[in-house]
Image (cartoon, rainbow, N blue to C red; front, top):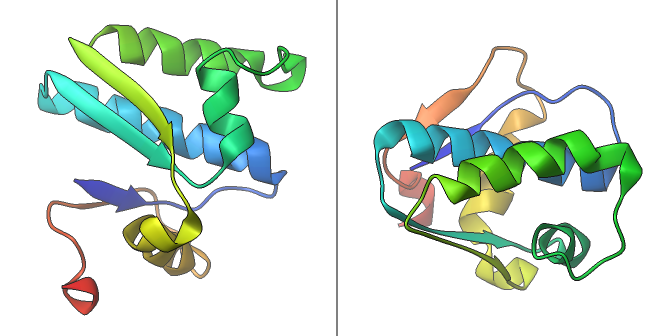
Amino acid sequence: KGYYDFIVYTNSITAELWSIREGLRLMAESGSPKLIVESDCEVAINLLNKLEKIDNANETILEDCRLYAASFEVCDFIHTLREGNTCADYAANLEVNQRERMVVMDEPPTELL
């Protein structure tokens, strides 16, 4: 699954963490027992893996992410290069002109197949 959504103006770290939280929520609702979360935002992944100093500005979103992550048997946060994150990059570009709430994709966009 995947999704894209309109995010109000914010900084890139907060936007990435917000996006990860919403993806975790979506997958928790789907009942999937195992999850791998990939992001090309190394700071966000390090914050989620507690490898970075605590970011007080994003602590609420980080706590939400960790609570959702704990609902899975396995949930790994992995850094990937932008080139390895083509689908997420494509979805992020779709949301630029988006004004409606979350659009869920059950399959990768056909443009990427």
